[in-house]
Length: 164
Image 1 (tube, one colour):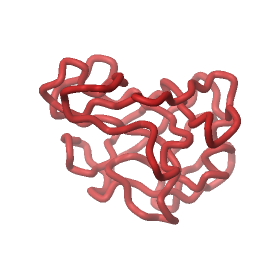
Image 2: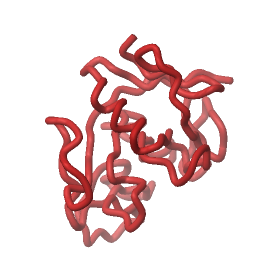
Image 3: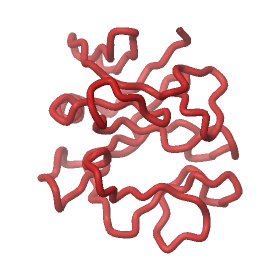
Image 4: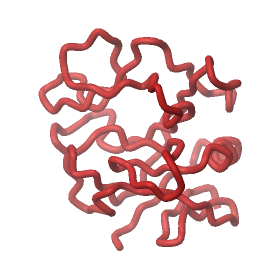
């Protein structure tokens, strides 16, 4: 199976059960900006970013995170839920973080590319802060497990999240 399927025990992928962390708001069929929930859906993997100053390229299709790369999370921003370049006048998240959470980050198609204001932004697969520590809605893994996932994805792979 090429899909990553979120279960109560972790993410099932390629005959493995991989420990993960989800949003502090649990799983939601009615995702809203700032609710901390991981949204229900079949989410395509649309991109991979990485920190070239911290690691080697994790896959041939990975894009380096540059200084000034930001992700808009402002519902009033015309570029809401898109990668933008700083300086940026609207609320945003820094992609080049001081911590290692976004050293590798898979981007999903949640509320993208045609974003609906308030439906939530930046549902990523990224490195966890510590085992099972909740996220702001993303799905997070240990660095070795995320690297393994990246190396085994196919262009058809999706993150499948179902209602509890």
